[in-house]
Every structure is written in structure tokens, then in C-alpha cells.
Length: 451
Image (cartoon, rainbow, N blue to C red; front, side):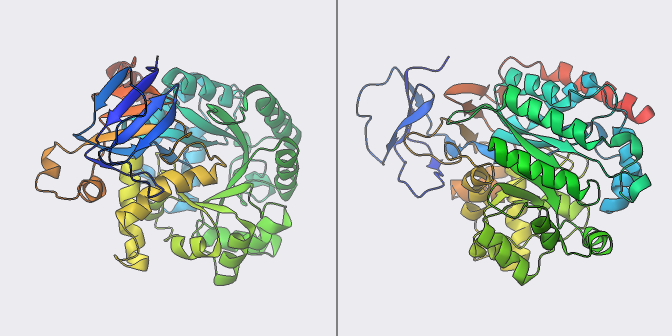
């Protein structure tokens, strides 16, 4: 359990995501941040424990706002290594349709463990595959999240527009609308937690314009409004998707989003690459969030998200690793590095700083998930923290610790705290046999591909 009062003392460097002076460290009490100490400042009252953080760079716990946990089973699969999105999906759909609850549990464990080791404390997953036998996929994920002690926004995804009706996915991967909506309502009622410190939250996430009907989009928006939960989908990832919307609906992607009642602050979108200036202005005015997925966008040659233009218009920006079949990793600190470099190609080195990229991975991502209790270091916020050491060869000769995290390629946290509890200590996840997990997961991945 967490100590009653713990002083994380004098970190080597600290990023608060809000410009507070916290060079003296943080006091953690009952799972939340009780004090933020300026340089040289002492805690107001004595602490039960002190942790000397002088060798650590201290960040808010990183927040991943778009993932597909199940895809850890199909990383670097040769038939799709060199394919863009649409053929990549069509090749992989039949493989993913063979998922079982046991394989999903292993895939989820691997994705979350990898995220946790990278300093990530909260993850959003977009799960939209419910083949026969996997109807309770989200329930499987809930159990794994609780086992690892992380926070998660688990989105009840869906596909209702199969190949027979002009969609992209094969028929065995789609569900009827009433089945989707009934299960969505069940999951909200059973698992969705509200308020500060929530561990499990549920959002509704029809997959994409080319895999769901407008009817399920509208019904999901109405259900989300009724139960006050968030909405998530893929949008404007590729030009193929834009062409699909024009041909099927006679609308560009943002017009389509508006037509089904999704253009608003409840919604966050994955990718958000192909917007024109008018669409950027409309998204910003609506407060609709965008999750930037740089590695996946580069891997599939999809394009570059116009992050600064969207932010200037009023749209929050966060980061996501996307699925581990298009990244092919689940490492959020490396994703922040990738965002830094990819966005510099669009906006220049002066405007895209390490602080900007880390801000997207923390406070920006929290905004996408509708949370004000995580993503920054301030009094009253949850004690979700990531601590990194700079003692490896890759950091030798570096001078600015915060910049070194991204520029020198930090990829593993030394310690991670969630709600005041240490979940990673000395680079190891507490209570997890990682080698056994790897062995079991590799065998599951082999079986899935073999069919």
C-alpha cells in the first residue's frame, strides 16, 4: 500500500505540464499529490517516507489515447509489412477474426505491460472485434487492467458494415446494431467509474466510416449523451477513407462526422491527418480532440497530423501508440520522441520542443479522455508518476535532462507510480512474471497466424 505521506525529494529534473516550480519534489498522501515543493522548500508537515529522486527525471504518468491491444499478436507479420491501410486491414481481418478470450487476455497483458514499462499509467484501447466466442472481450480487458493496477478507458468498438454491404471488413467480423447497443449499455452500467481516481471507464467507439453504418454512429452518439460517456472513432487517417466517404455518403469526413451527431467536445478522433483549413476550424470550434499517432502514420505512410493548426483552432491534441501491428510497439515515451521529430518536419524545430511533445503525452491526452485529475503535477491530482534514470550509455554526455529523455531515446522507466502505489520498481513490474508472459504470448501469436 502507499505510504501515508511520501516525499519524492529533489528530482534531477521535473516536468509538471503546467509550469509550476516543483524542483523540491512532491509530497504524496493517500494516493494524491498533497504538496508541490519549489527548489529548497521543505514539506509543511513531516513525511513517513522519503524517496531520494536526485537521479531521476520525474514526469506525470504518460497517457495513451489510442491503441488496439489485441494487435500485439500480429506484429511485424511479413504479408503486411509493406502495405498501406486498406490492403493492410483486408489482409489482417481474417486473422484477427480467430481471436479467443485467452489470446486476447495475453495480448492485453503484453500491451499494458509494455506501456507501463514505458512510463504510461493510463491507456485507452479501441477494441472492435467480437467474433463468436469473444462477445465479452471488454470484460476480459477489465480483468487484465485491474490485475496490472493501471487506469484504462476501454472503448466498446463496433463494426456493422461488412463487405456484403459495401464495407471493408469480412462478414464474420461484423455485428448487428441491436447487439452492439445492448452490450454498450451493459458495459457502461457494469464498469464505468466516474470522478477523480477512476480506474476503469467505458467509451463508445464505432470503428470507422468504412466499417460501420451511419445508423450505429447516430445511435452511439445518443447513448453516449444519455449516459455521459465519451465517443471515439478513426477519422481522416488516409485519402482512401476520404474517397470512401465521398463515394458512399457524398460527404467529406468532417461533414460526415457532423451529420451523425459526433462533432462536439465528447468526441476524440484517432489520427486526424487529412483536414482542410475549414474543417480544422470546425473541429476546434466544437472542441473535438485529436489523437496523434506518429509511428503508425509513418509506418502506413498515411500522412502527418496538423497538430499545431488544430490546437490553435481549439482542438485538444494527445498521443497514442495505435495498434501494435502498425507501430509495432506499445511504448509511449518513444511515441513522444516520434511526435517530436515528425512534427518538426511540418512546423520546424523552434515550435516543436520536447516540452510540447511531453505535454501532448500528458495533459493533452488527459483532455482527450475528459479527465482533469491526471496528466499534470499539481496539488489534488492523482499520484500517477513516471521516473526515468539517465544512467545508460545513450545518455552519457547529455546536459539537459528533460530534453535528453526524448533526444537520447529513453525507452524504459525506472519507477512508475499509480495512485500512490509503485507498479514499476527498478525497471520491473511488481508481481508480473514477464518471461512467462512472453513465452505464452509468443505461442498464442504463432497459433493465431497458423490458424
